[in-house]
Length: 350
Ligand SMILES: Cc1ncc(COP(=O)(O)O)c(C=O)c1O
Image (cartoon, rainbow, N blue to C red; front, side, top):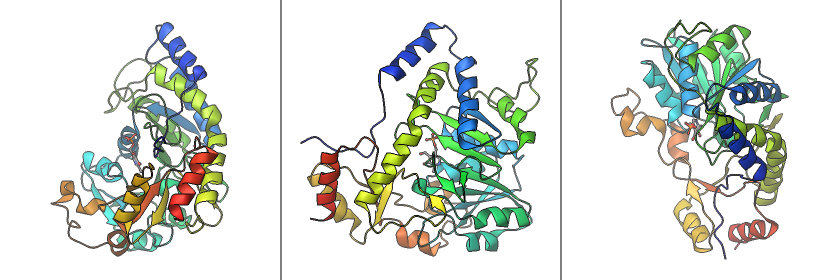
Protein backbone atom coordinates (compact mmCIF):
# COMPACT_ATOMS: atom_id res chain seq x y z
CA UNK A 1 0.00 0.00 0.00
CA UNK A 2 1.67 3.22 -1.07
CA UNK A 3 1.95 6.25 1.18
CA UNK A 4 -0.41 9.17 0.62
CA UNK A 5 1.63 12.38 0.83
CA UNK A 6 0.37 15.84 1.85
CA UNK A 7 1.33 17.18 -1.58
CA UNK A 8 2.17 15.75 -4.98
CA UNK A 9 3.77 18.29 -7.32
CA UNK A 10 2.35 18.07 -10.84
CA UNK A 11 4.67 17.13 -13.70
CA UNK A 12 3.75 15.96 -17.19
CA UNK A 13 5.17 15.88 -20.71
CA UNK A 14 3.92 19.35 -21.49
CA UNK A 15 5.78 20.78 -18.47
CA UNK A 16 8.86 18.84 -19.52
CA UNK A 17 8.68 20.13 -23.11
CA UNK A 18 8.19 23.69 -21.90
CA UNK A 19 11.21 23.41 -19.60
CA UNK A 20 13.44 21.90 -22.29
CA UNK A 21 12.34 24.50 -24.85
CA UNK A 22 13.17 27.30 -22.44
CA UNK A 23 16.61 25.80 -21.89
CA UNK A 24 17.20 25.21 -25.61
CA UNK A 25 16.31 28.83 -26.39
CA UNK A 26 19.53 29.85 -24.66
CA UNK A 27 17.65 32.68 -22.94
CA UNK A 28 17.69 31.52 -19.34
CA UNK A 29 16.74 34.74 -17.55
CA UNK A 30 14.93 37.98 -18.44
CA UNK A 31 13.22 36.49 -21.47
CA UNK A 32 9.75 36.07 -22.90
CA UNK A 33 8.59 33.30 -20.53
CA UNK A 34 8.77 35.37 -17.33
CA UNK A 35 7.15 38.31 -19.07
CA UNK A 36 4.29 36.18 -20.40
CA UNK A 37 3.84 34.35 -17.09
CA UNK A 38 3.47 37.71 -15.29
CA UNK A 39 0.82 39.04 -17.65
CA UNK A 40 -1.09 35.74 -17.84
CA UNK A 41 -1.12 35.49 -14.05
CA UNK A 42 -2.35 39.11 -13.70
CA UNK A 43 -5.15 38.44 -16.21
CA UNK A 44 -6.12 35.27 -14.44
CA UNK A 45 -6.43 36.79 -10.95
CA UNK A 46 -7.67 40.22 -11.99
CA UNK A 47 -4.61 42.21 -10.92
CA UNK A 48 -3.31 45.28 -12.76
CA UNK A 49 0.17 43.75 -13.01
CA UNK A 50 2.12 40.73 -11.81
CA UNK A 51 5.84 39.98 -11.71
CA UNK A 52 7.31 36.51 -11.18
CA UNK A 53 10.06 36.25 -8.60
CA UNK A 54 12.12 33.66 -6.77
CA UNK A 55 9.83 32.81 -3.84
CA UNK A 56 6.85 33.87 -1.79
CA UNK A 57 9.29 35.24 0.79
CA UNK A 58 10.99 37.36 -1.90
CA UNK A 59 7.56 38.64 -2.95
CA UNK A 60 6.80 39.67 0.64
CA UNK A 61 10.15 41.47 0.93
CA UNK A 62 9.43 43.28 -2.34
CA UNK A 63 5.98 44.28 -1.02
CA UNK A 64 7.65 45.93 1.97
CA UNK A 65 10.03 47.86 -0.31
CA UNK A 66 7.23 48.88 -2.68
CA UNK A 67 5.34 50.46 0.21
CA UNK A 68 8.54 52.15 1.48
CA UNK A 69 8.27 50.33 4.78
CA UNK A 70 11.35 50.49 6.98
CA UNK A 71 12.71 51.35 10.44
CA UNK A 72 10.13 53.01 12.69
CA UNK A 73 7.19 51.53 10.82
CA UNK A 74 4.82 48.85 12.08
CA UNK A 75 3.08 46.18 10.04
CA UNK A 76 0.29 44.11 11.57
CA UNK A 77 0.55 40.38 10.85
CA UNK A 78 -1.34 37.33 12.14
CA UNK A 79 0.19 35.36 15.00
CA UNK A 80 -0.50 32.12 13.17
CA UNK A 81 1.05 31.87 9.73
CA UNK A 82 4.23 30.65 8.10
CA UNK A 83 7.06 32.63 9.69
CA UNK A 84 8.01 34.39 6.40
CA UNK A 85 4.95 36.64 6.72
CA UNK A 86 6.49 38.20 9.82
CA UNK A 87 10.17 38.02 8.98
CA UNK A 88 9.63 39.95 5.72
CA UNK A 89 8.69 42.90 7.94
CA UNK A 90 11.73 42.46 10.18
CA UNK A 91 14.07 42.11 7.19
CA UNK A 92 13.39 45.71 6.14
CA UNK A 93 13.95 46.94 9.71
CA UNK A 94 10.26 47.50 10.51
CA UNK A 95 8.35 45.93 13.40
CA UNK A 96 5.82 43.15 12.95
CA UNK A 97 2.90 43.63 15.34
CA UNK A 98 1.21 40.31 15.98
CA UNK A 99 -2.59 40.16 15.96
CA UNK A 100 -4.67 37.22 17.09
CA UNK A 101 -6.66 35.05 14.68
CA UNK A 102 -10.38 34.30 14.35
CA UNK A 103 -11.59 31.29 16.31
CA UNK A 104 -13.70 29.97 13.44
CA UNK A 105 -11.76 30.71 10.23
CA UNK A 106 -8.19 31.01 11.64
CA UNK A 107 -7.36 34.14 9.63
CA UNK A 108 -6.17 37.41 11.19
CA UNK A 109 -8.87 38.83 13.52
CA UNK A 110 -10.19 42.19 12.24
CA UNK A 111 -11.13 43.38 15.77
CA UNK A 112 -7.62 42.73 17.00
CA UNK A 113 -6.17 44.49 13.94
CA UNK A 114 -8.26 47.57 14.79
CA UNK A 115 -6.98 47.48 18.37
CA UNK A 116 -3.37 47.29 17.20
CA UNK A 117 -3.36 50.18 14.72
CA UNK A 118 -1.11 53.05 15.84
CA UNK A 119 0.20 56.16 14.05
CA UNK A 120 3.19 54.01 13.03
CA UNK A 121 1.10 51.37 11.25
CA UNK A 122 1.93 51.33 7.55
CA UNK A 123 0.29 48.11 6.43
CA UNK A 124 -1.55 44.96 7.41
CA UNK A 125 -0.56 41.61 5.95
CA UNK A 126 -3.65 39.44 5.80
CA UNK A 127 -2.91 35.79 5.15
CA UNK A 128 -5.42 33.61 3.32
CA UNK A 129 -4.44 30.82 5.65
CA UNK A 130 -4.64 27.28 4.24
CA UNK A 131 -6.53 28.86 1.30
CA UNK A 132 -9.28 30.45 3.44
CA UNK A 133 -9.72 34.10 2.39
CA UNK A 134 -9.29 36.63 5.20
CA UNK A 135 -12.28 38.71 6.39
CA UNK A 136 -13.57 41.37 4.00
CA UNK A 137 -13.57 43.72 7.02
CA UNK A 138 -9.80 43.93 6.69
CA UNK A 139 -10.19 45.84 3.46
CA UNK A 140 -12.57 48.33 5.08
CA UNK A 141 -10.35 48.79 8.13
CA UNK A 142 -7.31 49.50 5.96
CA UNK A 143 -9.24 51.94 3.82
CA UNK A 144 -10.67 53.88 6.76
CA UNK A 145 -7.26 54.09 8.43
CA UNK A 146 -5.41 54.86 5.21
CA UNK A 147 -3.03 51.92 5.51
CA UNK A 148 -2.00 49.43 2.86
CA UNK A 149 -3.40 45.92 2.66
CA UNK A 150 -1.02 43.18 1.57
CA UNK A 151 -2.38 39.74 0.80
CA UNK A 152 -0.16 36.84 1.72
CA UNK A 153 -1.69 34.57 -0.91
CA UNK A 154 1.10 31.98 -0.74
CA UNK A 155 -1.52 29.29 -0.06
CA UNK A 156 -4.45 30.81 -1.92
CA UNK A 157 -4.20 30.46 -5.70
CA UNK A 158 -7.80 30.66 -6.90
CA UNK A 159 -9.39 31.64 -3.57
CA UNK A 160 -12.19 34.23 -3.85
CA UNK A 161 -13.62 36.81 -1.49
CA UNK A 162 -16.85 38.65 -2.35
CA UNK A 163 -16.30 37.93 -6.04
CA UNK A 164 -12.66 39.09 -6.03
CA UNK A 165 -9.86 36.64 -6.54
CA UNK A 166 -6.84 36.42 -4.24
CA UNK A 167 -4.27 38.63 -5.91
CA UNK A 168 -6.74 41.41 -6.64
CA UNK A 169 -8.15 42.13 -3.16
CA UNK A 170 -5.42 44.19 -1.51
CA UNK A 171 -2.90 46.76 -2.74
CA UNK A 172 -0.30 44.05 -3.26
CA UNK A 173 -0.44 40.26 -3.11
CA UNK A 174 2.32 37.69 -2.71
CA UNK A 175 2.08 34.13 -4.02
CA UNK A 176 4.38 31.16 -3.52
CA UNK A 177 5.13 28.36 -5.96
CA UNK A 178 7.02 26.24 -3.42
CA UNK A 179 6.67 22.63 -4.65
CA UNK A 180 3.89 21.75 -2.19
CA UNK A 181 1.74 24.77 -3.12
CA UNK A 182 -1.44 24.65 -5.26
CA UNK A 183 0.66 25.31 -8.35
CA UNK A 184 4.42 25.16 -8.76
CA UNK A 185 7.26 25.96 -11.13
CA UNK A 186 9.75 23.09 -10.83
CA UNK A 187 11.76 24.72 -8.02
CA UNK A 188 11.23 27.70 -5.75
CA UNK A 189 9.17 30.56 -7.10
CA UNK A 190 6.77 33.36 -6.31
CA UNK A 191 4.63 36.11 -7.83
CA UNK A 192 3.95 39.68 -6.76
CA UNK A 193 0.71 41.21 -7.97
CA UNK A 194 -0.76 44.65 -7.54
CA UNK A 195 -4.09 46.38 -8.04
CA UNK A 196 -2.35 49.78 -8.12
CA UNK A 197 -1.17 51.03 -11.49
CA UNK A 198 1.24 53.43 -9.73
CA UNK A 199 3.19 50.46 -8.31
CA UNK A 200 3.47 48.39 -11.49
CA UNK A 201 6.71 49.82 -12.91
CA UNK A 202 8.47 49.84 -9.56
CA UNK A 203 7.41 46.24 -9.03
CA UNK A 204 9.11 45.19 -12.27
CA UNK A 205 12.25 47.14 -11.33
CA UNK A 206 12.53 45.85 -7.78
CA UNK A 207 13.15 42.25 -8.83
CA UNK A 208 16.00 43.43 -11.06
CA UNK A 209 18.25 45.58 -8.86
CA UNK A 210 15.86 48.52 -9.02
CA UNK A 211 17.01 49.18 -12.58
CA UNK A 212 15.07 50.94 -15.32
CA UNK A 213 15.30 50.17 -19.05
CA UNK A 214 18.56 52.10 -19.35
CA UNK A 215 19.99 49.76 -16.67
CA UNK A 216 20.46 52.56 -14.18
CA UNK A 217 19.55 51.58 -10.60
CA UNK A 218 16.84 53.98 -9.58
CA UNK A 219 16.17 52.47 -6.18
CA UNK A 220 17.39 49.71 -3.91
CA UNK A 221 16.46 46.31 -5.29
CA UNK A 222 18.19 43.00 -5.79
CA UNK A 223 18.08 39.96 -8.03
CA UNK A 224 14.76 38.29 -7.34
CA UNK A 225 14.13 37.22 -10.92
CA UNK A 226 12.42 33.95 -11.80
CA UNK A 227 14.27 31.82 -14.35
CA UNK A 228 12.83 31.25 -17.80
CA UNK A 229 12.59 27.50 -17.15
CA UNK A 230 10.48 28.04 -14.03
CA UNK A 231 8.29 30.60 -15.77
CA UNK A 232 7.70 28.24 -18.69
CA UNK A 233 6.61 25.48 -16.26
CA UNK A 234 4.45 27.96 -14.34
CA UNK A 235 2.63 28.97 -17.53
CA UNK A 236 1.63 25.34 -18.13
CA UNK A 237 0.51 24.89 -14.54
CA UNK A 238 -1.57 28.07 -14.71
CA UNK A 239 -3.66 26.43 -17.43
CA UNK A 240 -4.63 23.68 -14.94
CA UNK A 241 -5.08 25.66 -11.75
CA UNK A 242 -8.85 26.22 -12.03
CA UNK A 243 -9.47 22.49 -12.52
CA UNK A 244 -7.14 21.61 -9.67
CA UNK A 245 -8.89 24.07 -7.37
CA UNK A 246 -12.27 22.59 -8.28
CA UNK A 247 -10.90 19.14 -7.43
CA UNK A 248 -9.51 20.39 -4.10
CA UNK A 249 -12.97 21.78 -3.28
CA UNK A 250 -14.62 18.49 -4.20
CA UNK A 251 -12.10 16.54 -2.10
CA UNK A 252 -12.58 18.88 0.87
CA UNK A 253 -16.34 18.39 0.77
CA UNK A 254 -15.90 14.62 0.69
CA UNK A 255 -13.42 14.60 3.56
CA UNK A 256 -14.55 17.30 5.89
CA UNK A 257 -17.96 18.16 7.17
CA UNK A 258 -16.87 20.29 10.09
CA UNK A 259 -14.27 22.62 8.54
CA UNK A 260 -15.86 25.97 7.88
CA UNK A 261 -15.48 28.06 4.74
CA UNK A 262 -16.23 31.77 5.12
CA UNK A 263 -19.57 32.95 3.66
CA UNK A 264 -19.28 34.81 0.33
CA UNK A 265 -15.92 33.26 -0.26
CA UNK A 266 -14.33 30.33 -2.04
CA UNK A 267 -11.63 28.42 -0.20
CA UNK A 268 -8.71 27.13 -2.26
CA UNK A 269 -7.98 24.26 0.15
CA UNK A 270 -4.21 24.39 0.14
CA UNK A 271 -4.49 22.48 3.38
CA UNK A 272 -7.42 20.71 4.92
CA UNK A 273 -6.87 21.14 8.65
CA UNK A 274 -8.84 19.44 11.38
CA UNK A 275 -9.03 20.95 14.86
CA UNK A 276 -8.20 18.10 17.24
CA UNK A 277 -7.58 17.93 20.98
CA UNK A 278 -5.64 14.74 20.35
CA UNK A 279 -3.51 15.99 17.44
CA UNK A 280 -0.57 13.70 18.20
CA UNK A 281 -2.65 10.54 18.24
CA UNK A 282 -4.59 11.63 15.14
CA UNK A 283 -1.27 12.02 13.33
CA UNK A 284 0.08 8.67 14.47
CA UNK A 285 -3.18 6.92 13.51
CA UNK A 286 -2.92 8.43 10.04
CA UNK A 287 0.75 7.57 9.75
CA UNK A 288 0.12 3.97 10.78
CA UNK A 289 -2.21 3.50 7.81
CA UNK A 290 0.23 5.15 5.41
CA UNK A 291 -1.24 8.66 5.27
CA UNK A 292 0.85 11.76 5.92
CA UNK A 293 -0.55 14.28 8.41
CA UNK A 294 1.13 17.13 10.21
CA UNK A 295 0.46 19.97 12.69
CA UNK A 296 0.22 23.42 11.08
CA UNK A 297 1.52 25.57 12.81
CA UNK A 298 2.81 24.29 16.14
CA UNK A 299 4.30 27.60 17.36
CA UNK A 300 2.67 31.06 17.14
CA UNK A 301 5.04 33.38 15.26
CA UNK A 302 5.64 35.73 18.20
CA UNK A 303 6.87 32.78 20.27
CA UNK A 304 9.57 31.70 17.80
CA UNK A 305 13.12 32.16 19.05
CA UNK A 306 13.79 34.69 16.28
CA UNK A 307 11.38 36.98 18.14
CA UNK A 308 12.85 36.38 21.60
CA UNK A 309 13.57 40.14 21.86
CA UNK A 310 10.17 41.16 20.49
CA UNK A 311 7.88 42.97 22.90
CA UNK A 312 5.13 40.40 22.23
CA UNK A 313 7.34 37.33 22.62
CA UNK A 314 5.76 36.31 25.93
CA UNK A 315 2.40 37.96 25.28
CA UNK A 316 -0.49 35.60 24.72
CA UNK A 317 -2.58 35.81 21.57
CA UNK A 318 -5.33 33.68 23.10
CA UNK A 319 -6.72 32.00 19.98
CA UNK A 320 -3.26 31.36 18.50
CA UNK A 321 -2.10 29.82 21.79
CA UNK A 322 -5.24 27.74 22.02
CA UNK A 323 -5.07 26.42 18.47
CA UNK A 324 -1.33 25.89 17.94
CA UNK A 325 -0.62 22.13 18.33
CA UNK A 326 -4.23 21.30 17.51
CA UNK A 327 -4.58 21.83 13.75
CA UNK A 328 -3.82 18.67 11.82
CA UNK A 329 -3.36 18.95 8.05
CA UNK A 330 -4.39 15.90 6.02
CA UNK A 331 -4.07 15.31 2.24
CA UNK A 332 -6.63 17.15 0.07
CA UNK A 333 -4.59 17.67 -3.12
CA UNK A 334 -6.15 17.23 -6.57
CA UNK A 335 -4.23 14.09 -7.53
CA UNK A 336 -5.87 11.95 -4.81
CA UNK A 337 -7.49 8.92 -6.39
CA UNK A 338 -10.90 7.57 -5.35
CA UNK A 339 -9.14 4.73 -3.58
CA UNK A 340 -6.95 7.21 -1.66
CA UNK A 341 -9.97 9.34 -0.73
CA UNK A 342 -11.62 6.17 0.64
CA UNK A 343 -8.52 5.39 2.67
CA UNK A 344 -8.44 8.91 4.14
CA UNK A 345 -12.17 8.76 4.90
CA UNK A 346 -11.69 5.45 6.70
CA UNK A 347 -8.86 6.91 8.75
CA UNK A 348 -11.13 9.85 9.66
CA UNK A 349 -13.98 7.56 10.69
CA UNK A 350 -12.32 4.43 12.07
C1 LIG B 1 1.61 31.77 4.32
C2 LIG B 1 2.96 31.72 3.65
N1 LIG B 1 3.64 32.86 3.46
C3 LIG B 1 4.83 32.88 2.85
C4 LIG B 1 5.42 31.72 2.40
C5 LIG B 1 6.78 31.77 1.79
O1 LIG B 1 6.83 31.26 0.50
P1 LIG B 1 8.19 30.62 -0.08
O2 LIG B 1 8.40 29.31 0.60
O3 LIG B 1 7.92 30.47 -1.54
O4 LIG B 1 9.27 31.59 0.19
C6 LIG B 1 4.75 30.51 2.55
C7 LIG B 1 5.34 29.25 2.06
O5 LIG B 1 5.53 28.31 2.70
C8 LIG B 1 3.49 30.50 3.20
O6 LIG B 1 2.82 29.36 3.40
